[in-house]
Length: 215
Length: 288
Figure 1 (cartoon, rainbow over the protein chains, first blue to last red):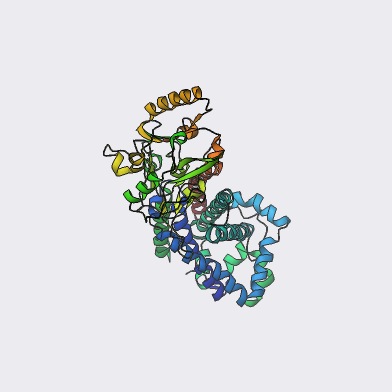
Figure 2: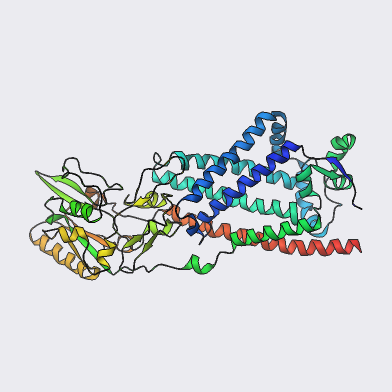
């Protein structure tokens, strides 16, 4: 019998936000990738995929804006968390290969609500989000105003953001769903809860300081 | 839970596979691209500004017709105007260059078109398939001559189909000459084999030299050879042609990123596979 999952890790609204953002990003990814990855361009013929891309972006940008307005404190905390880096992050990075391949937990410094790897992902989401948004606005609304040279480089900014986001997304999906030791990660993004053992082993600092008393 | 996780993995693996495992055959297939084939030679010294090429183009391609344009205010290329004149005042007379798609051998528009709507015809010109056009406008942004013209852009959907000179594809593939060349009565537009036209251009330049006209050819080597070449009596810039047209560097940078991005993604997937196997083995060991 599996251990009861009683530690609250994510709030319902955060989970909703996560999946709306995910769904819209996947639509953006597919409708964008066909223009970018070699040999898939035929799927964009007729321009329907661009319309889908533009509908999806309304949700992709709208979701964080709405979330921010409804939860300003949590949102600011998320940004602060993403941008705060310290000594333990470097220790984590040094020990990470031993842990993710071998399961050696000894050297891993106890982590807060998110670990260093997740923080890297959050950072990539923030940075590429800004790059996507800025270059996208120019490509959408200022195409006729911009000189061709400037337009071409905005497309390349969009490309760079795409590569960064795609690679980190692959890592995120792999670790969240597939890696044999991340057993409760996907479910916690569904109902928001994890077990005490999982909390202690993966987010020791957070569990001891914040979550322990609430569960 | 185990089953749903497995199903999820299968679905995700399938979707990722679709995204990443593009058949290289499609990606590497090159259109028939030739420096030779058929071409047009435009001789500005023979043009008498009659606008018949302009009218013939409109009539043959069923584009909305207009009154005869004014040399002082010549029309620009647009979705409805695939060829026009670029008149230059020299003393008290007007000398015009007929302006349209130059049908490059190394065509920036073909290189950047993501849907394959633009491609090379084996006769040398740049053909396009309106059905395939997504309206992205990359061709218009990249063309060093500013030729492709997008129909009015819908701000919400971005739909805007590209238009440009077709080289009168249905005529030339049936052995006829393009409508503009057929309409020209002064020999300012000659249609023929590109190799023959190069010889003809060189002879004409020598002839003009004997008449003390300092003429030069344009388009013999530019972009690996244009399929619309010119005899000019002034520098190319005077007639609105860049002296050294290039496929913009951004196109090459994009190509590098495309392959880099695909390569890194495939490397990451391979890394995950390896990581999964090792981590799984170690976990099994611990459980025993």
